[in-house]
Image 1: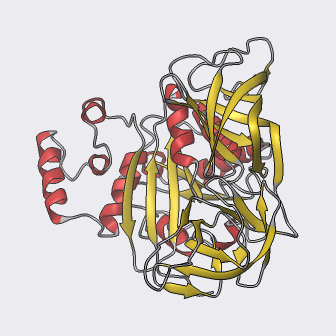
Image 2 (image 1 turned 180 degrees about the vertical axis):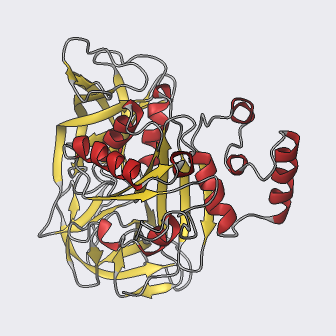
Length: 418
């Protein structure tokens, strides 16, 4: 299989405090030569001031002053880098329980979650929590990096014991692809280059796995969903009668001549053309941004969805969802919120909190149903008008939404439709 050099892979890192997430990302950037010279110089100077012999790799990502002072990551830090084979976006998420919402935010669009485990401590509560969130967010691939192998004498036995610990609880999770890697982020073993100290490990280094991992099949190519963002009417020479419906393909494949239905109205038509900034194309697929023209004049506006006539999403006003509460203020019973789902904006309310999840034990809490910041809960939501939804496990775009508080305009929750 030939890889597309422009293919973008998003990955998120998670682990307990001091498991070495920032050091790992620093090592990835440094060894893959993705650091600008002036940035490298600045970090070399800072490392010297802190009394380090070499470069403190964690400084490449811990950009916030509070983080540098405490030596921890407290926000989601995004980093971009490119190798000859692929482009990458890293979401470096914090480890503390009070930053669960940050991990949910950083991981929501990821193809891969990298979970770090300290080889000395093995699987801890934080590990289980991060694996559970990765499973909840339906991240297709999980790479478990057992770090600090240099501190356990690169022991194969320690590595195998941690794999057994992880597999014991991960059998309950909905993650299809889990891989394990023994690494030392500090020394660079198995990060970009193969380790000389762990000849017993036959797998590829982390970067090589990220570069060659097959992610094209992660996108749903069956259910064609095109949320309309805006209607294009240029009204200029050559385009006097042009009426295009612009947006980003959420999933599926569209071609001229396809029979389509506009939801929620139910009107049907055929695709006439598919246009992009660079001209007309013969097919459009996720995540392309295109403008679709139809054979018939239909009243379509922002928030409508163009779908294949033979494959429609559900149009519902009431549904169950798992939400992560993101706000400092608790959820108000039956309060009105604005729900944003694809390009559709409606009024909604939380009709009922069914249960909360204890993300340490995965147990359901059915007694205390007050939603506070970082809580994950199953709730029933009702909207004023129908939304065109799919289950989150089938389609991460049409199966997710956010809730906004009408009074403060703050985003209060992120949800995954069940």
